[in-house]
View 1 (cartoon, rainbow, N blue to C red):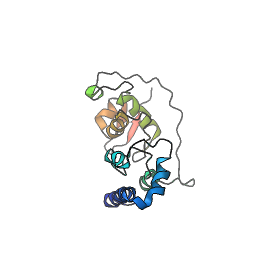
View 2 (cartoon, helix red, strand yellow; view 1 turned 90 degrees about the horizontal axis):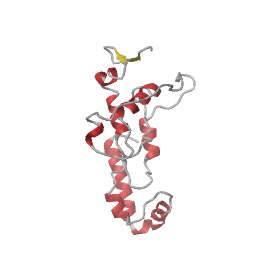
View 3 (cartoon, rainbow, N blue to C red; view 1 turned 45 degrees about the horizontal axis):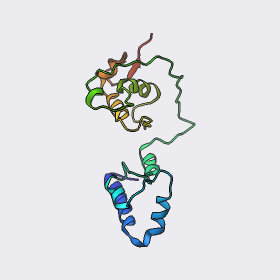
View 4 (tube, helix red, strand yellow; view 1 turned 120 degrees about the vertical axis):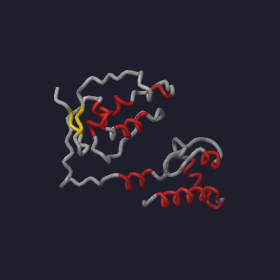
Length: 166
């Protein structure tokens, strides 16, 4: 995929293809996809920031994952996690949580516990909560030793995180 300049070039190519009247068949193919919003393509694109966010099914998603993910290698991959088996109860009085209201918002510290349990630094994280921004906040704060330590983990001088034994 490439660097940011390449991503912006791809996004601009997508915009240009939509503007060309000769590309009506390709455009109609995209508009017929489930999840594609109703409306004029220019309006949909004005709500988008391709390739990072599109107000329609994102045609860049596969390229994004290929560029930013680590390929699975069964010979060297040693990923092993037990199921997360703990009660997660985080208060809703944190200043970050209270920055804006949202009817289904999940506290970022609750999400952090799952990210710390199931991922390694640099992994892609799926945002299953879609809308509140708390998954992104949680993923970012997993790199902050003080916040991680506030959840009961230990962080050494190299930034390696250890779960405290209970």
